[in-house]
Image (cartoon, rainbow, N blue to C red; front, side, top):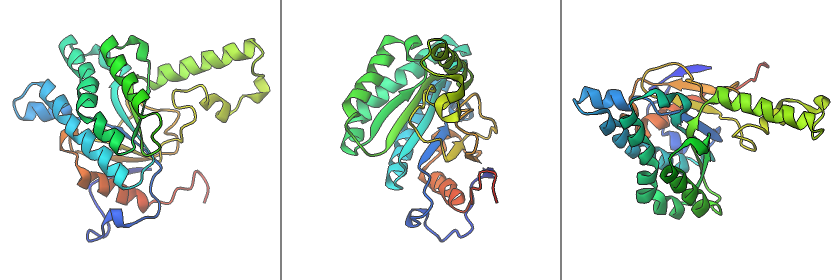
Length: 251
C-alpha cells in the first residue's frame, strides 16, 4: 500500500476532473520545514513559517476536490525534545495562522477540530485553537483536524485505560469490546479512518501518527519538502490514489 510521487499514468489528465474515488479523509505528515530553511542558509524558524503557506494551499486544494476531512500532523509528543526556542516558535504558529486565515476558513465553510493532548500546550495556543473550533462549529464543509501535541502510542494507552475503567465501573462488559468500541475511546472517535496518508520530505515512516487509524490506509511518500509541496503534488498523490483498488485483505 506504499506509493511514490510524483507520477500520473496519463499526465494530460486533470485529476480534479475525475470525480470518482475521491478519498474521504486525507492525513498529512508535514515534514521538511527545517531542511528547507537549511538549504537556503536560513534558520529553521523560517521553514516553519514558510510551511504555513503550504497549509493554506493544501486546505484549498482539498476543499476544491470535495475531500471531507483533512488531518495535519502539526506537533507531536516527541517534538518536545527540540530546542526550546524552536518549540516556542512552532506553538505560536497556530495563533498566527488562525489570526490571518480564520476569516477565509469561515467564509469557505471549513470546520476546525483538534486532536491531541491540549492541556500541555501554552494557554495562548489552546485559546487560539478553541476560538477557531467555536467559530467554525456550525460549518459543514471540509473538516480540518489539527494534530497538536499528538502521539499515537500515548493515545492508544490512554484509550485502553479509559476503556478498562469503564469495564471496572460496569459501564462496559468485556464481551462488548471490539474494534468499534475501542475506536470510540480515541481522539478520532466518530471520524472515518484516513483513506490516504501523504508524507513529505523524503522520510518513509509514520512517526507515531495515527497508528491504529492507518491500518488500511494508502501511503504516499514524496521527497518534496513541505514548504515546496503545492497543489500540483497534492493532485498527483490524489491521482495515484484514484488508480488504486482497495481490497482490505480480500480479492
